[in-house]
Length: 141
Image (tube, rainbow, N blue to C red):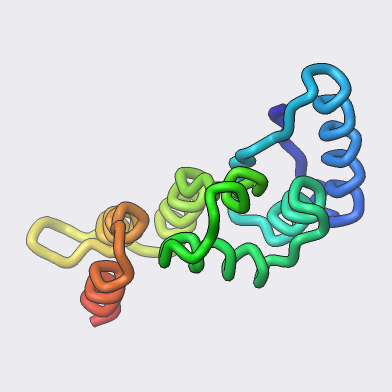
């Protein structure tokens, strides 16, 4: 299901996704295992509540962390729907905002408009916390 909305009210999103989930189960007897969304607290919360039996964000993060430590069984991991954040939208939003607020700099000068999306993309592609910490520290300085 794809939908685009500016209405980010948790209850409305939750009811929409409950209806969708019920129809999916009726039609093909399957369960949604992955939901891709932008960085919206209301959407993330609605997805977790709909697809993971009212799972809170803290419980979801705890599950993900314990999964990386291999402290969860295959059955537990396969019975969970995962929320994936679509960072392309976030990076584009940051880029657009910087374009409106930061002046463009000439050659040889530090260009915040170019650096920020590049650094944010690099941070997104790190695959362990130590590299992410180092990159974030270097970006901050």
